[in-house]
Length: 253
Image: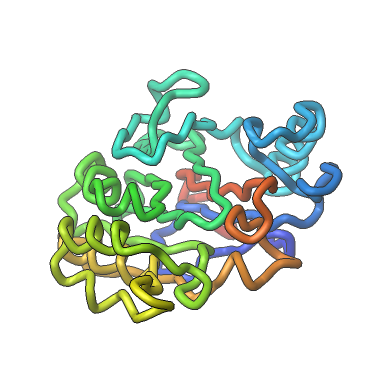
């Protein structure tokens, strides 16, 4: 996959042939407040601008085919991208077929890329606090056709803990799902607290059996020039996180 400053490339021990990236907000055609590389069709942006942005992404990243764009609902649904139709209702996708591009859209929620260590399957999940509490990551790991210890994960850009202040009902939901989640929650104002989505996700992945978790450390809220943030801006665009299997024999893979 060509290097490009307009996307984030994972630094992880992915097997040969696995390609992944997260886009930034830079390099597209959309007008404010969706400026400029908005890839979400259900944001209120002009459909023509989003379609042009999706074409730009496909061309720049030399994608082998169009991504499967999901209708995300903050749930735990997982689909096989090589069998699902356009606008499949789910928050995660996986495939074991070369050239099939899995994708999720985010603008503060955490994108999580998964890959089998031998490269035979990949997946991606959209994990906000609701999805984490409900078990979307466990569902995505279970959908891969390999045992969890044979998978690795990469955590993409999401809202950072300093900016992600949540109410007691959110903290309670996270702790009910994972009693150890309190370690990833720090006091905020009054009865509120700050939640570390990346740390919460890493806990859930390790508990599910995934032995290697990479990435994290960005903040979509504070890095305004680089990322969209729904919490910061309200009406805004969406970044895409993509993963697919190429052919390991291709030079530079």
